[in-house]
Length: 246
Image 1 (cartoon, rainbow, N blue to C red):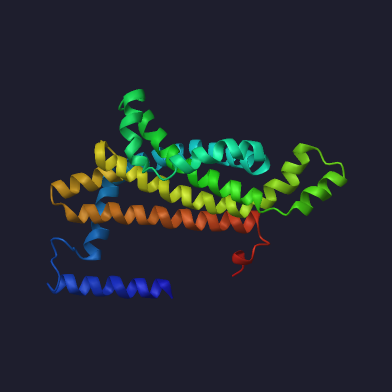
Image 2 (image 1 turned 90 degrees about the horizontal axis):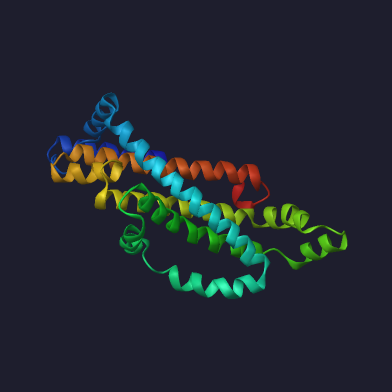
């Protein structure tokens, strides 16, 4: 059903643009955007920018996501750690991550490291918050049963904490991926020399609107692929969840 609605929307867009009902300059027909994507792929420009954006985003996501998940497990498992760290998380999390980009550049310069670090910060918070919530929602009975059977801390982590918090961790992964992609694009719009964000900015400056739409389409496809990747992982790792059923 969603695909049918999408096809109807693009068909109406195509007809309206071809008939001049909407401005072809600012709303080029979808067929023209597809032709532009094929042309940019043939020249290698789109592939180069796509690889730059995805590589930058995934690097930041892995750094921030793994750090957030590790700290979230500690915060959920230990009340002492949570009491110390949680107020800091509550204070820093609402701050727009793009606003700390100048501070990071002051310390680390204007190179790739600064860009990756601010993306990592964006991925860190949804992971730490979701992971903490996931661990804290595990019933105490599970920990008591593990203790009664003489489980070691590693066994408690492996057989109680990790499977019990996995649904919330995967929800955090999806949020972190989307935030990482959004912030990567924003950084490239601000000061990128390559990437889809830089491509969008250059296309706007030169009024090559069809290339702007091509870049936006690629960003939408990346987000869609991430969605299906997380759904696949959730069905493999937490098949008992109600929302994993067809």
